[in-house]
Image 1 (cartoon, rainbow, N blue to C red):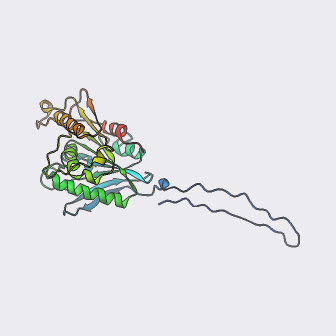
Image 2: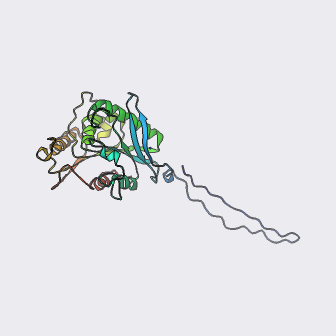
Image 3: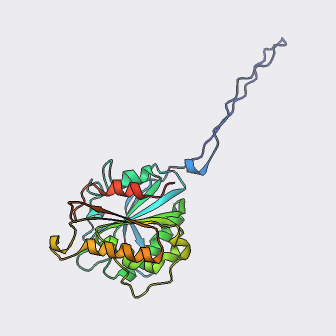
Length: 274
């Protein structure tokens, strides 16, 4: 999920028949320089189908309109139930002037909201995490080929189950795919659980800052399902710090798992500058 500057220089010579009047030429206008970063013609597209090499298929929303190329790429990975994907205009996460879409676009990022290919029960990213990680790897490769993306600026961001998937499956399995960027995860983001972990891409460790944002009340005592997102996030933070990534965290006081309206600003604060 191109415009090129055109310059026309007009030269008009005026002569008068039967006399030796001097030729007059209007002043020329110097065209502005042409740069790749002025291309902004890619449209927004919603519910775009994608099938990965492992046969998994799903849909993505791609928000690219108005973003100069080469662009950064932000992949949003929804929480369980896919609220963010199914409500792309809601100001809870994605929509509105302070939502992820608007603020990431302002920072020079194409935003892709990806729906998990999960078809069994509640839609999640972390169930069948390794297969879904392979799907996402193919999706990222596809997007960086289809759009003019700066591959050193690929950001993974997600909430709850999407956060867990990012740190427990995708990064341990596919760090070699990435050249740089960041991760920004909310309401979770625990230690790897995959059995298919690969050696860490040491070059990525130095160019991929990771940020956790979770409410201080987002623990088992305040969860109907017993999910202790705060403990998961703190454990993930400690693990990735030990690996060598540059890490940081925001523990939001007085807040549980519902982070209404906070996502966009926190994402904007931690996006790598372009």
